[in-house]
Length: 407
Ligand SMILES: [Zn+2]
Image 1 (cartoon, helix red, strand yellow):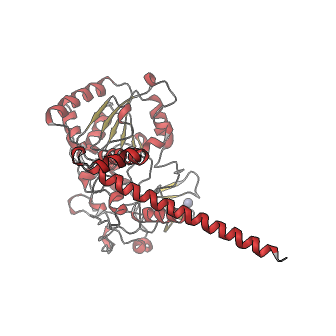
Image 2 (cartoon, helix red, strand yellow):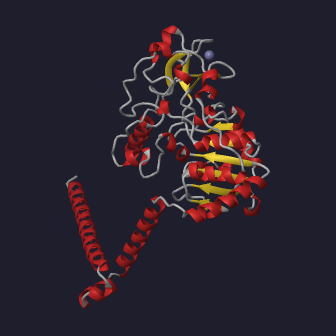
Image 3 (cartoon, protein in one colour):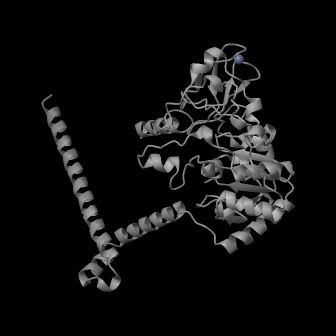
């Protein structure tokens, strides 16, 4: 009985000694790294004999620091926005125009970069939502409901009308493709649509399109909007797929349409997407086919994307600029967006009188000062200063918190 505490003590002492040795070892390594890092920063000619000897002695530290520097450079290069010179842009758009004309089944994939001109912030650009939140800044919201389809949205709609584009797959939740007049069956909104709430208790799921952002109360794994289905009384849910969720709603996500389009596609045009999320959706890329049987990729994005090496052509330009040039090349006029033709006003279900108070978001106003179906009782928005709930603000912070806890 007397022996045991001794053993315990000695093993504790051993553990402590081991622990201490580890700390000292780490301390030594840290000193070597600091020394080597300082020497490496000096031009070779300015290094003393002693310093040069230190580099030879600590070969491993030198290699590791060089590897880290390379990684930093690559990361920096990937985040930079690059613009092709005017001549290069023109000649690239000529190639793109030829590809569009020759394609049998052209599918377009779009990301936040096509909506920045509508003053909707993108995610990963230098001023994107993601970048800002990662730096610990709050994201100011220019009023999202005031956004209108951009030149790019209108071009895509026109190319579809001309039967040059067969299907559009979008990561954007801003509803602008729909509002440009693109038919719903030609559209897959993979991450949902901020104007649509659905009843999943009804079969098939019943959709209610509104003239305001329905997501102010929703967030990661919490989709209830607080309003109820006018047919069965169940609570409605938003259609937004937050970071870290898997979207299963049939509409407006339309995965079936997206997968079918990808299967048929011989050309894919990616516009304004970092492709960091889209690349994870295997069914969009036909990677199971041999390389020469896959659709040809044309990518328009200012920043690096993980598909650049596989692209037939990468164009560094703003989507609106590239699409305007493309339409000129194709000899197709770009239609102007008009509120009067915006299908959302016909598709929308007006709120019941007792639901008018159920949200504080601004309501889309129809053309010519005409008021939308529920605009007469519109509540002044109190939440325009920063993005609180809804389709990215809160979803993002919840996801982050969860990750931190798991780490
Ligand atoms: Zn229902």
